[in-house]
Image 1 (cartoon, rainbow, N blue to C red):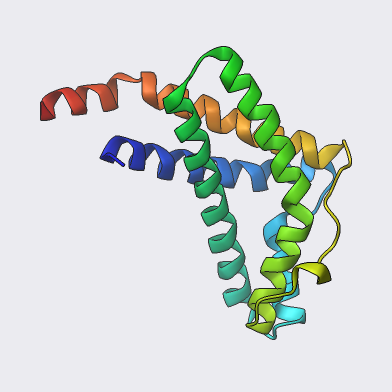
Image 2 (cartoon, helix red, strand yellow):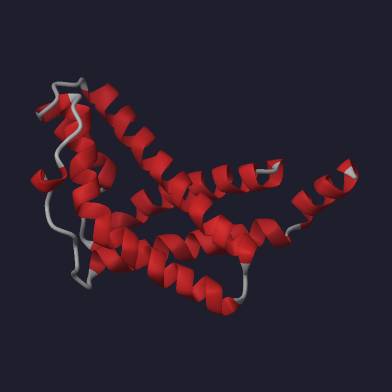
Length: 162
């Protein structure tokens, strides 16, 4: 991975993760980080400060990973059709997995043991606020990637290197 891709992934991933948490209450939900932090305190016995820190580390890390996946797709083909398809498909896939994945992370952090897959909630197949929020997240990611990829800042830095 070249430095421009690394910077793009980190910058867009962090910004999109913060935006996700900021926007989440508008969809009628408590924030993911507050729900995770509460579980870390209640179930795992963590202090509030450590629980909040852990919840943000997990959330930002997952957002950066999702941004990396999106960037890899964007680098292969950044046509409007592919961008639209990745927003819809990644939004749907992450919504589908979100409930059991979040439960798995909470159980791992609060117990220190790998949870059994069959002990987790079912996949989330509902079309509703969680899906719209995840689609909005990937819209922000693709727009962020597009802005950075098309900005003169990274392009001029790359040109100076050559």
